[in-house]
Length: 79
Image 1 (cartoon, rainbow, N blue to C red):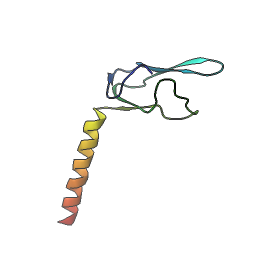
Image 2: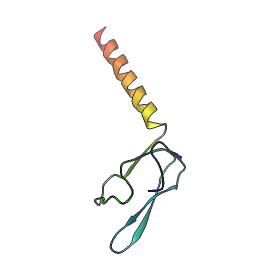
Image 3: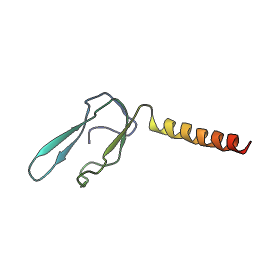
Image 4: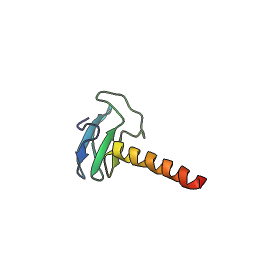
């Protein structure tokens, strides 16, 4: 794993290398943004498992905005 949580990355950034019994595979980002790592260095992962998520803005800020929007929606639904 070559990136850290909340790190801002560009498209095609090398995120990690995955070692199998037959090959070493490089994982690159398909877009730019803020990365959330769902794996750790030397962790065994399953085929098809999500290893990273990329957000257009810092994902903690996005979570806070979502929570504020949920509260606002609840208030407007009650009125």
